[in-house]
Amino acid sequence: MARDLLLEGFIAHDEAGLGHHSFRCLYIGFHPRSKSMIIHDGHAAKVYADGRLIYSYEKLGAQPRVAGDTHAAMTNSRDLLFIGGWLKAPPGVLPNGLQDMRNKYSHIHMIDENNRVEVLWSRKWDNRIPPNHWYGEVTDLLYDGHEDAVYFTRADGHAELGLWRIELRDRKVEYLAEGTIYKMELKDDKIYTTLFNPALMEDSAIVIYNMRDGSVSRINEFEFALEPGKRMKIRRRGGQIIQLQNRLMAFYAGALIYIQPDKDKYTLFPLLETRNPEDGMPYHLGGVRSQKAYVYGIPIVAFNPWDHLKEPSARSDVTLLMRMDSVAPQVIASTGFISGMATDGVNLYLGASHTNHTGVYTYRSGIGGVFAIPVDRVISKPLTPVRVWIWDGAYSRESSGLNGWFGGIPLRGFNRRRLKIHASKQAKLTIAEYSLAAKVRMEDVQLKDGWNIIELNQYDDLVAFKLSEDNEVSAEIILEP
Image (cartoon, rainbow, N blue to C red; front, side, top):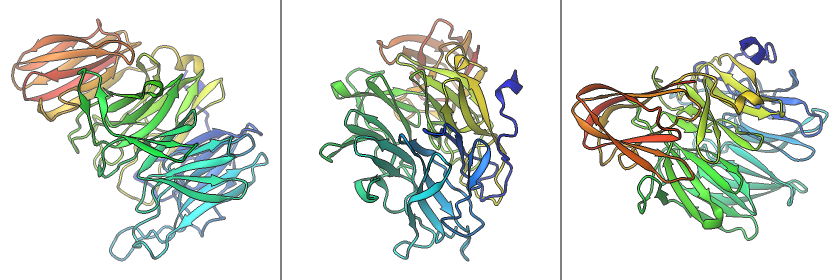
């Protein structure tokens, strides 16, 4: 069966580049006119159409050319496919050992139905910033057919970060909103966005741009679903945002923000709210450096491990592929790092590699591939077992997790569900079961000193946990189809 899901030899994926250990990103789109499958290889700086190399960024800089894109910026109009990101052409290192960014470009390219590639916009380093700094990379693209314009975000870098727009008829570029604005979703006449916030310098927020009057609003306080009446602010790294019917869901590390635009309501739910021993933050971040896809109108999101763990833990280095249903998320599979995602209605195509992005540079990139999963399997039961460490280390009822709550694990579709938890002393464990549409149900369980096995088969949706007192905890969720 595995051979049926693998597109063998689709692209030669093992190439030299300025990589991050063996990390690789492969972004996928279907051209609106030619229907060709376009692959943007974001480390070797190459673009393919139906497996044939069509572009190597020769229009921007000298060889060797590396990087291309690590944030999955791709969109299309009726006639063109757009890709965006960044490029070093050529890469270099300064005498002090820091990266030389003087040949780093931010860019947007467009591809026509004959696979001709044209530079729509680019921005290069100049002496207004230090040589190891760079102007904001392109992190998302959104085409608006009413204005015939491309909106783009720039969330990774040192200058010119925010929301931008290019009018295609005259290529006029306009700066619309500041901030580490990362991923976008269009709802009515508004663009809803997340903040990347890589240095945790600002409160997590939903930033909304009104396309009619140009106004910008910012929501950074949310109702907390597990404790009615409580409102919370968080300071987390941000990822993807998706739309389902008339609702939106935005993902921050360990959290889902459920948006009801008609009610002007923003509700915070724990989702994969964990603690990892490397930096104390949640392991997973929904849609970071990854595309999203819609299968039969249902959003599919990859929850990759957060990519700045300097020494990735064996407990965390796994991606969870999820479908975001209107009631509760459902895990599809645990996989390697997922970057690309697109569907032709028959298959869900995934660009994947065997290792996650990290902040440590080498001069070789690794091996990745493009896989296909039939869509009828995507909307059925989970494809793989899942084990997720959800806590490891000191627990404080006052400061840990989201107001003491951790977990937020989707159980739907699994036949065997259990929690394995080690406590340093006896304590009461409160289990909350919740969905995005129903009331929270809670139950208390007494933990003994040492290992405890708690069966979760009576729960169907998401579960989160809170202890009655401070403790030293190791906890793992074990799920089997």
